[in-house]
Amino acid sequence: MRLSHGFTERNSLARIAWPFMVGLSKQILWPCTLSSFEGDKMVIRRSTQPYSPFSFHLGTPGRQLPMLPTAAGKAFLAYCGDREREMLLGVLAVQVLWRRDDPLALRALIELLGRN
Image 1 (cartoon, helix red, strand yellow):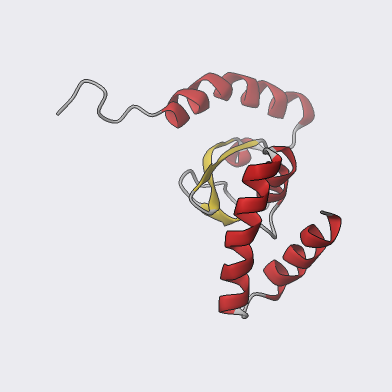
Image 2 (tube, rainbow, N blue to C red):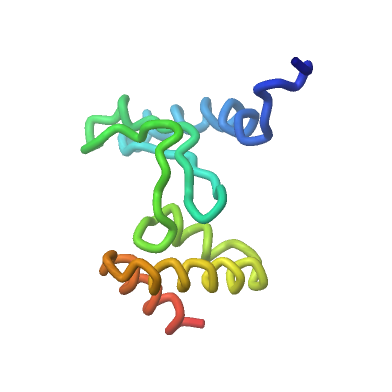
């Protein structure tokens, strides 16, 4: 086993962001969730949802969220670079067309492609 075993940049980001997330949630009462891009999905790293009176469900760390129909995925696509966005939308388009059983993802893809 190496000294760096279990350490990732994402864990470090979540640890650093946590006090700010808690402070923001205490101030506005709404939950705050930190997600990061992994593969073709967004993954919840930390969430204050268990501590918010306005939360409907728990933001379970490690939970994977689809890119297209979620706010986390749309925010990532909005702020990533143009080249990365084009590549990712191409991959997601193939997945959506292959599955065809996710009308929300298909609708979101059509909306995103229509904006570009």
